[in-house]
Amino acid sequence: MELKLIIGAALALTLGGCVSSSKALRNTNGDLITCKASGYGWLGAPVALINQGDCLRKYREQGYYALDEDPNLPKVAASALKYQTGVRLALPAGWVAQPLTAAQVSSGIKLFGLNQTLDAGVMFSTVKKSAISDFDSYVRSRQKAAQSVGTENSVTEAELTEAGGYTQADYRATLTVSNVRYRYAYKIIRGASEIVIITVWSTDSNFDTIKPELDNLVNSMEGI
Image (cartoon, rainbow, N blue to C red; front, top):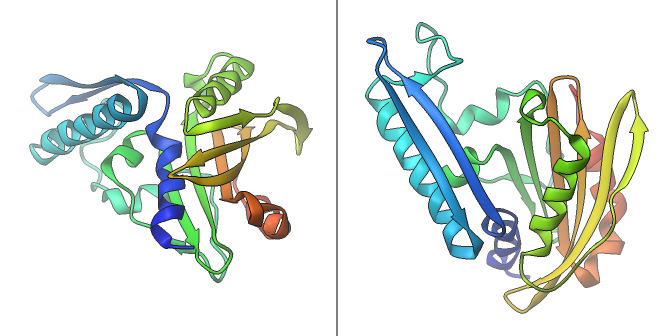
């Protein structure tokens, strides 16, 4: 399968649904600015995130920093953001990490990897646990977002389990993107300080064959 189709399946994870985000920055003089993102659907949501990312980048270049950052600490490049979280996902041989767009970084995505041999992809993101008051409602909102992506889509009910002292939700989605049928497996884990979202996907016809390898990848996550 062409690489662009697997990437298209990845974009479906970030382009669908709605987005509403507000990030405040300040400088050493105490000046405050806010970069907002608000949009809906295949066009509105990604455009909003890209605009917010451009806003954040512009003001960071002018010396602004997030309210919870120490301005005396060295700045971390956007390409290294995936290492800031305490949760880690190491890609085994055959997987290649892809550069993140401004929209993906802004939406909390830490890692996007592709495996052309398996014809599969993985996306890993986190949300601060303190920002989510109701885990069940958050899971339902993610399921609803998946239902708005692609065509001929179906999303299973979430299965809630306890593992290692943490609650996790697992569900799947099947949908068509660019005339190709894909299957996605979602795992959302309520960790000690972060909520972790990991998604793996492949084509519908290939998914069951490589599912054991995808499971091994997901289970290699550390630092929850």
